[in-house]
Amino acid sequence: MFSTLYAPLLLILFGLIIRGVSFEFRGQIDSPGWRKIWDSCLFVGSFVPALLFGVAFANIFQGIPFDDKGVFHGTLFTLLNPYGILGGVLFVLLFLLHGSLWLAVKTEGPLYERAAALSSKLWVVLLVVAVIFLVDTWFVTPLYKNYLSRPLLFVIPLATVVALLITRLFIANEAWWNAWFASCLTILGATLFGIVGLYPNLYPSSLNPAFSLTAFNSSSSPLTLKIMLVVALIFVPIVILYQGWVYYLFKDKVTLEHLESDEAY
Image (cartoon, rainbow, N blue to C red):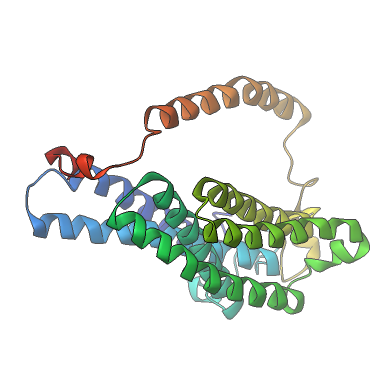
């Protein structure tokens, strides 16, 4: 992937670095101008990765122009094609809706009201873009071949659509936790839709299908896979427990009293 998507992946990396640094630097100086600079960096560092992840995935769906040596035949602008940009917009909207629902869960007062109102508007835009993306996918990618050959697989995109529709129902009922979990299922379903449609390809070449990386010609040795399985079985539960502990510590809402504290800024 770095041989072919080097520029966008580096931009994603730089964006994530800027985002992480912004959290630390924003409160170091008590100045509105200083905070505005790092607020802008935080926006850029969050927006760019979301957009470029979508662009990258959409391009993988339709195939990347690389040869049998893994040499990329194109530029960054090759990836910024209409379908790639549409995928980027879809990802941004998915994350915006997900984030607005999380704010609705975790906040109260004016911020809660803004997040709740925004989630309703974002859902409509997301639905329109998702429909356009699914239709465009039919014409510019081979993803539907696996689904047409095994119709039972259509349960994946169908479940994703149902999750998206249920999200709107929960938003209308102000059941924010349920809406957030439904949004999780929507994102998971969108990811599985692409993975299942690509299989056995992992990284298809648009120049020649024989150049594509598949689940078979790109896998590690059996010994490596066994070692990594043991590592995963040990450390993935540890990571899950740690993340669960962190979320438990910060389980309460961010109240207006919290925002009145100097440490909040």
